[in-house]
Amino acid sequence: MKNKITGKLLVLIISICILLCGCGKSKDDTTGKKSAGKCTISIDCSTIWDNEDMLDKSIKDYVPKNGVILKERTVSYYDGETVYDVLKRELKKDNILMEASFTGDSVYVEGINNIYEFSCGEQSGWMYEVNGVYPGKSCSKYDVEDGDIIKWNYTCKLGKDLEGE
Image 1 (cartoon, one colour):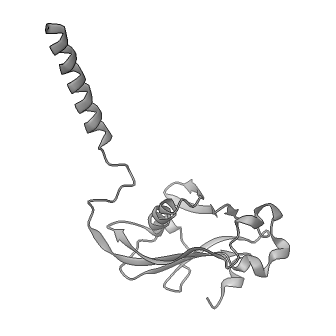
Image 2 (cartoon, one colour):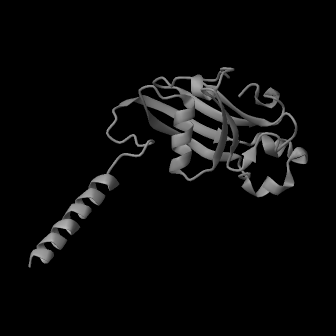
Image 3 (cartoon, one colour):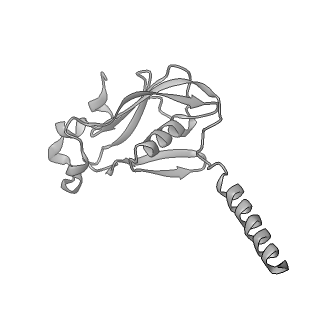
């Protein structure tokens, strides 16, 4: 009788521990946080089709026909978030691959959706703009503000093919 009670008590304690440990928030969890505002984000690589002759043929299937990887959407952002934080969260929601490198506290986005720097020539890679301006600093250093319009664009010519966008 005593062994049955001890066994049931042990199962109850283990169950409670598993329940409590399994309910913790993940590092990227923003539930429960109050939104600091809204911003818009999109990702486009349509310049690749204008430079298809330079495209690494092994990634051609990853390039959407219309060039849109992430259609423009309005999302919440949270206090202290950067352009990189918003990008990372939205790509994770859609299961879109991103690869980045880190130097100190700066981030460089190397690839999105299997399209990397140098995939379409020696001067190709990802650039971001906020409200129509290319900031010229790491996306991890640019704090998001209410109403910001964030666009990630793939360039094949060091940004010259993005002028006027």
